[in-house]
Amino acid sequence: MPIRPTLAKDLAHLPAIERSAAQTFRQVPGLAWLADSEVMEASEHQRLLDAGTSWVAVDDQDCLVGFLCAEVVGTALHVHELSVGQAAQGQGLGRQLLEQALAQARLQRLHSVTLTTFADVPWNRPFYERLGFCVLPLAELDARLSAILAAERAHGLEGRCAMALVLS
Ligand SMILES: CC(C)(COP(=O)(O)OP(=O)(O)OC[C@H]1O[C@@H](n2cnc3c(N)ncnc32)[C@H](O)[C@@H]1OP(=O)(O)O)[C@@H](O)C(=O)NCCC(=O)NCCS
Image (spheres, helix red, strand yellow):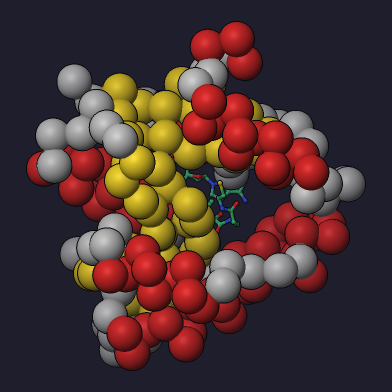
């Protein structure tokens, strides 16, 4: 399986993958600006690597083509970012990265996996729904997920939703 834990040597390559992945948003009216927006901080990647909740997808030369980084918060594994470089999209790697995160959450006997994403982008909410995630109604959000959505709105991200896959 071309998924392995992120190593220190990988960190320098993750921003380019995130930028490449984000080019898909150029197809979406109103979201094209995301293709040129900020990517995750190096220190944040380091923190999630140290926590053991960061994985990469690699090709047969061990070159990075995608990553998923997450964090255990209480009884949930929260996915911070999932990116597959544009040239490698549509080959099942995004799904495999997410399955790796789900497997880790099950191993740690966590209650759920959570994330926030665009409700109306075809490779966001519907992609996660096919993997078993459900949209959480706004009225049922806990303080943590409400705060994440509020922070995203403050950064100009509209049309976001919180999703969860309950494991137990
Ligand atoms: C979302 C993303 C990680 C998916 O990675 P991927 O390797 O291309 O996905 P997969 O090949 O595993 O495909 C997973 C499913 O998404 C669908 N999908 C992938 N790209 C798609 C697209 N551009 N349009 C519509 N559906 C798409 C696939 O058809 C597949 O459907 P299936 O589950 O019915 O088989 C990738 O598109 C990406 O990096 N996008 C930009 C960043 C982003 O949106 N990240 C998620 C933030 S919450």
